[in-house]
Amino acid sequence: MSGAESAGPTRGDDGVDRAPVPDADVCVVGAGPAGALVADRLADDREVVVLDAGPRFDPADRLARQERSIRPSYDRPDVWDGGGERDAHANSGERFYPLNHARVKGVGGSTLHWQGMVMRLHEDDFNSGSARGVGPDWPIDYADLRPYYAEAERELGVAGASDNPYAPPREEPHPMPAFEPSHSDSLFAEACEELGIDMHSVPNARNSEAYDGRSACVGYGTCQPVCPAGAKYDATVHVERAEERGATVIDRAPVQRLEHDADRVTAAVYATPDGEEHRQTADAFVVACGGVETPRLLLMSDSAEYPDGLANSSGTVGKFFMDHLFAGVGGTLDEPTRQNHVGFYTSACDQFYDEADEAVGPFKLEFLNYAGPSPVEMALTGDDWGDDLLGRLRDGYGTHVAMGGLVEQLPRSDSYVTLHPDRTDDRGNPVPEIHWNVDERALRTIERANEIQRSVLEELGAEIEWVAGPDATGPAYHHMGTTRMSADPDAGVVDADCRTHDLDNCWIASSSVFPTGGAMNPTLTIAALALRVADDVREGL
Image 1 (cartoon, rainbow, N blue to C red):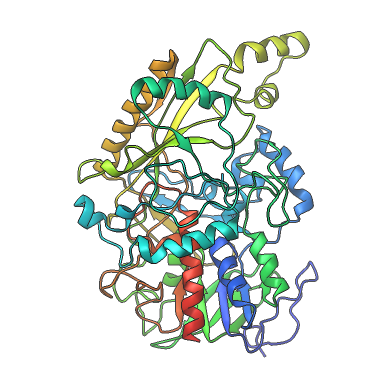
Image 2 (cartoon, rainbow, N blue to C red):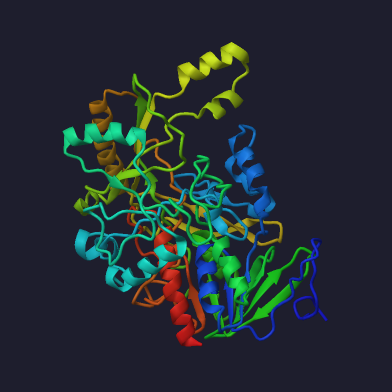
């Protein structure tokens, strides 16, 4: 009997049983925030199994990972054991996309290394074509997602305040009070008041006080890429809760393909560390692998019924790959700015967000608390000691100041994820090839954001030392749009409920379903959609 047919014990080199779960109701592929929330929501009264390609990370190792993150000999993917043949990828197109800086493969997913900013999309983000004259409208609107946004804020634990006059309407306060403005926020506030620019607090998925059995933030300042305290939300919270409710979570089990007939997925075929393949059957399947691995899995699951990839009768699987672009300006002041005390920003400005139109997109502005190098980074990158080192730190640290911002990229068909024709990963599967292109509207929007950022720093009296403009921008590591939502089956991959148009029992819970990206960090919207998907799966079973 082959490994794919075996139902007996399947133990890897770590002694973990990775055998398929008999009589599963729901199989979730991916244990990031979307998959974890779906599993937690359904595990009370359904047999749920979650398959994740990466390992479980021991919480006891987080201090060691924090130390690794601040040492110059390690790159960002190294902190969570990323890279190598397992995570190989290829690039083409106008711009290089650093995929392994954008993800963590493992239980908890990319919330293990995210910064933790959680904003709701604005109302016009759901109706970009109608309201702004460019891009498609979503088949749902803000009102459809509004109650799920509130629930997602409770589930993740969000600290925030109702002081943002430009935010979309909400029904109740955030679960925790907002973090206090930083010292540099107070400097920015004086300049912004002179310029007529509004500042407001930022919703954070980290505890400003003890919440949900987790401590308040203790200010390590290494939120990206690791929070040793557990005050910042990550999806292991809901993975563990789902397991307590009866779900089975299988790590180091990369799904190789989804078996199917013309109308339904029948099994997820996954590999295990012992080199075997196994079939996980279920009544319903939720694919929650993010904006790159989700289309990759569908394209690898091609068949006679779906020769161009599973759920791809529209030809849009992998198309319309998007990310947010970064705009920033930084420099120095002749006074202390107290940077790097916390690893996240505490004030922002959405004042210009809804001025978006066909020519200039939405953008948000960020008043950063981590401009310039930290003393630890400076010390570790030097070759001096004693008084010389102390003098260099005193001269180089403490006066930096910077603003950042996120800018919307429009969906375009020539920005896409596909399978590389020749290169394969450690399992012999074609690696994802990212063909990332950026539209002129996004570049104009970066210029507009830079104008405002420069005016604020000049009002502060800062000496401007760098500008992340159209020629120096990069991604915010928010990959979106590759299995987009549409009312028309010919225009997208999933319907308004995130169920695939082609398959009755397959849903996608991911930023890959976003028709447009707006300019707000996507995780809260991912979480809200995941909760909505879970409700629809329950109804469909």
